[in-house]
Image (cartoon, rainbow, N blue to C red; front, side, top):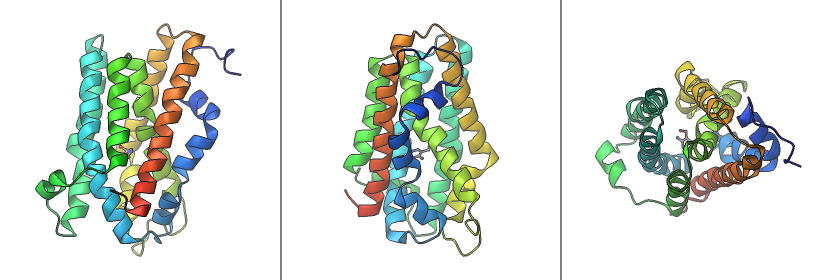
Length: 229
Ligand SMILES: Cc1ncc(CO)c(N)n1
């Protein structure tokens, strides 16, 4: 089924097309819908957000690995942009929201890591350590491009950004121009790497990584929903 897929543009779209059920289970998870209509219990969101802070620490390490694996300055600078977006922008959202609940950044950093957090972050890092830059960026792509899609979808729902929705700040962050631009750059990086000598035989291997990352994203929402440690 995938053997005739040739390298070229829109690698991300082709991955999503082949991984539809896993992608849908991730971007349309009950946790996501609960943020959209404001019905998600706050306890679940808090558990998720603390774990997501720990997730982002390791995610920043994965971008640092992408800098290390960059083959020229352009690739290194592009990965540095991703690293800065996490450390300087995205984590501020978590720190700001948690401060509202009386949780400091230092306390966040000390929180015990849930197994779903470990599984996902270490899978991405391991994939990048074992493989090349394309493997690493495919493993990273459901996170960045997926959250941009989730943010956009939720922001389009009637009332999602109203004062009455406790999750409007989260939605606005990921639907906002800054994050959408990070996701656009991630797509471009995938296309550039794929155009650089990716063989058709590579696609099924990348699809395996992509599907695994989508499943781990869905597990992450599930961890928030069930308050799993
Ligand atoms: C689990 C997870 N996936 C993706 C993102 C987007 O960066 C995030 N903050 N957390």
